[in-house]
Image (cartoon, rainbow, N blue to C red; front, side, top):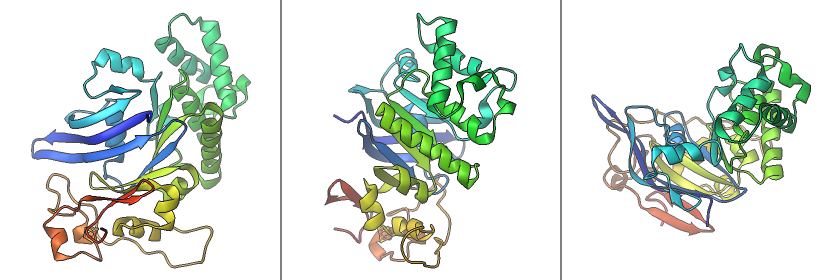
Length: 318
Ligand code: SF4
């Protein structure tokens, strides 16, 4: 049984102008020890999917359908008090821009220890501090730096400290939303290396949200490509990068430089994602798709299974 099963998840934001269908029938699994990437342009529903999983969707957002099964229990129908128990201990999230969320007036070690004390019973302050030091060590920061204040840390160290904090209660699933954005390339590589080590060392499952396909290629076992609130292609990272089937996936891959392989000019995807208050009928990608056919404007493509867990929603396939 997968650690997490998301089935036909629908999360809408109910605005005065009507419902914004931010996540509209999304399904994917995360196995134990696996990293699944959610990729796509800004506003495609990646972050809303993550916030739905930890049930922290800001108003006026609401889950209106589907299931989120974590360790056999449906989080959608679970009481808030039970969800609170699962957050941190079962599922932890590193939010976008998290490194700026450390409180400047408290020592980094105190902030991690505080997270432990807030979520675990029968832990003394001394034990929590020692665990905070160990967690910092685990993310490659000298434990003595637990005494430092956030301004004494570099950006990369603050981000690693936030990873340490997310791991404070030994979660089974870590969701990281753009964990390396806003860092320079070398620091970005260090943060990703820390995450890769943690995955192996702790057999951690991860959902990695990013618009950067090179990060997905390096870090993920499986990838879900999202467009306008839907997953348009899903499969092993190998299948997605070697044998992409959906024109949007091909467009995204063409828009990213490849370190290995032949040099080629980068192609951007023309146009911009649709307004989800009123998404286009049929295939939501049709206004931007270079291969759109008349049927694409009318009928939503069905999910086609290509074998090996590779699925795609496009009228060109199947
Ligand atoms: Fe393009 Fe049609 Fe496929 Fe949509 S269904 S991606 S418009 S070919």
